[in-house]
Image (cartoon, rainbow, N blue to C red; front, top):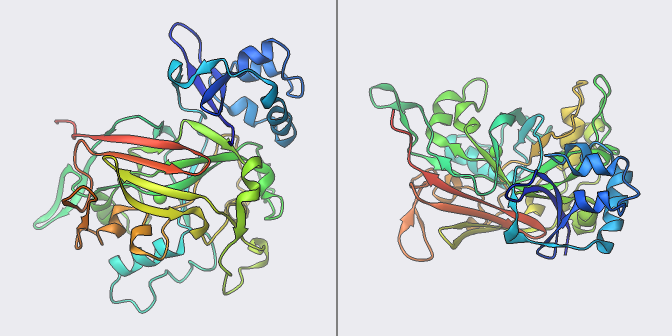
Length: 371
Ligand code: CA
């Protein structure tokens, strides 16, 4: 079982770092005080912090040392004894668009008359945009239906979204920072990655459709992004990688590598019933390439940066990682396993993302705030 790191609180006690091992929690702050984490510099302070950032900033050697110690430590706390908090202090949040099947389906939905569903740049670079770090929330946080400007029959209107959606994504968490002005090479990019989370990039498709030209997603995405409460370190997942799709045409030199993708089964459930099953191997661009591209202009990585992969969809209908695709933007309501059909999310709906080796991401939709 892959260990995971998070931050938790117990009633009347300060928040601190924990490790989730086989369903129980190691109190890492207590282990550090007891001198059991000798390979980790300044372990007492690092594991008494209210986020994983000080630990993540230490770099690969300290992460490996900690993983080596972990089997010797006692998991003294049951999972239901602790309240997991947001595990990282999110620095910058970047959302990519790296699944070919998702990008092609979106192209077919929004540009049905185009010969080629992918935008002209899509096979040349990992398309992305900078998102809103301050609204990243941990699993379990309720999601209030956002309001915004929508295209109405008689002109723009303001009101609650009628097309609230999810996006099933992998989130890569940056540990070691990079230096501004110095691009990170594709071959060294993984050295900066601390770990992985599942990520639900909640989206209001009608707000997004109206606002998105010409600068890209804005308020249709920025109201909430949910991540798992426990971060899975990269190291134990490296042997889950398999060759990815052959990239044709070959990308430019700074992006060129043998693409390896994570073979991790993923699921979306709605009110307890599975509505999509896919796999992280359906990503075309790898996190190494995303990092190399993100830093190619000299922009730097910070500890706590969160890189969303983009919605992960496979080739089959049941492998689509968002309701936009599952319902073809509302035109083809999809069947729910328990009966009935659905296009977009309704108030009271609960969505759970789950994946092999990764903590689940849960969220309930609450009605729009009365204004
Ligand atoms: Ca997204």
